Image 1 (cartoon, one colour):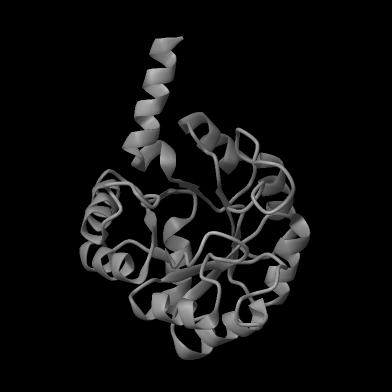
Image 2 (cartoon, rainbow, N blue to C red):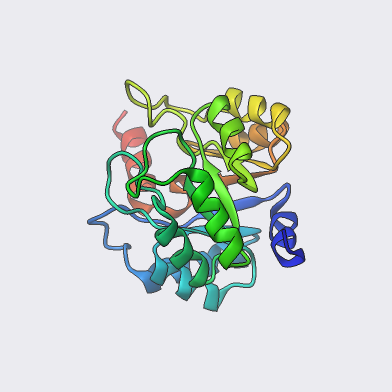
Length: 228
């Protein structure tokens, strides 16, 4: 790990990373809009941002000096979060300090292993690799594959049934207690209190997305409360 890469992890420790993304069909799903959204949350105190897409990474990198966690969602089934080494390298070369990849044990579209992708990023760029996992075993395997950090992003999304309503603080605490790399809590963190609870569980940093950056979701919360 280079000094510059290590400093990216150090910079987000104990802080709030904001995921600035928008689903397909959302009017906010525009590289310039999302990059400016990232700049706005950094101005408000976010220690880093998480953004999706090579062009969004590139534009965000031009607007912020805080660490950028980049990814590339390709498809919507199976392994689609930065699914191959090619995706990961393109994200890193666009300016991401940390590349988030699917860290589960499911087969990857290019037939390569997670270790292959991690090695390619480390060998050809100065970026780090963040493995998005759903279980403790996947977290352990991701570390064995060379991942520099692990996130709880996929908890509740890769197994049978739908995800629970709240964050998986049990998984966050278990990973933090077992792994020798930083653990980042992400997924269904919808309040400042839940973000605080995640930090108290021992994680390195907390990622919040929808609850901060989705006007559609926030509008729905108000509508539901007023209708009740």
